[in-house]
Length: 339
Image 1 (tube, one colour):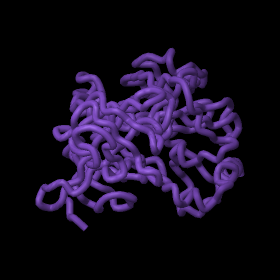
Image 2 (cartoon, one colour):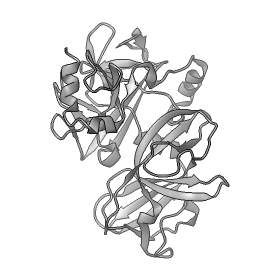
Image 3 (cartoon, helix red, strand yellow):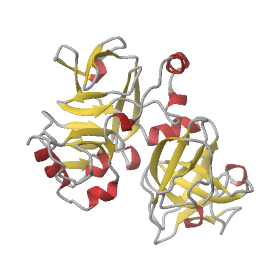
């Protein structure tokens, strides 16, 4: 294991392909795996191997803005440094273009040890993808999009008065009910419109699945907070934070794939648990991944305030393996929160 002295501030787990699984089938680099941006040639055509499937790349974001491989990552060497190299646009023979992030892992000598392709939409084996663009602009923004914490348009947020208002109608300064700190004013609200495919496809939590009053639509990595009156999952904690994507069961919690989705991010001076459609959910957490995407004045404000907080302040951030052991986890959690 490579020792990294920098302190990990946040962790993201994103699907990635090792470069060896995505090779040029036609063009100047025919036969070679996809490489760093400086070595790519526009109009080369790449294909996934027939057996290729993405694996999770665990990314630790450091307080100094750097990245490394998380110890539980399915890819890479735990602790090894990671660098954002570029964003490529790939055009398939049929269908819409796919944008993908190139991430480079280095060894202790600073040499390239591995290259990973992180697509923002599903990719199909035996399909030619023509390289039509490559850039290093907006790298942090792309990574933040792939791991965003956001509510979809129409989500009703509980105000300090107890009334509910659609998130798109909220404004900075509006006072929102938080779970632990009462009424708190909104610092900033962000909005982005994305293709609802692959990593960007929202998760639909159907009415009543977690005792929510209406359907709730959130980004895949959005954490929901469940207070168990008894430790139904045997997690060792009663207060749990669960990623929406890890709750998908094909019935009461599903991926809503297709079209476009309007995502709204809600930020406070601290990381809070708020109420969306009647259930507890997190607000935007400022960390080395999300901070560069904020407006300059908001970044300055967040740097001058006290510690923004951490998910651990609100409960145990549950890992997917614990949920995989319980296919009835959603119903179990719903019942445990009522007893």
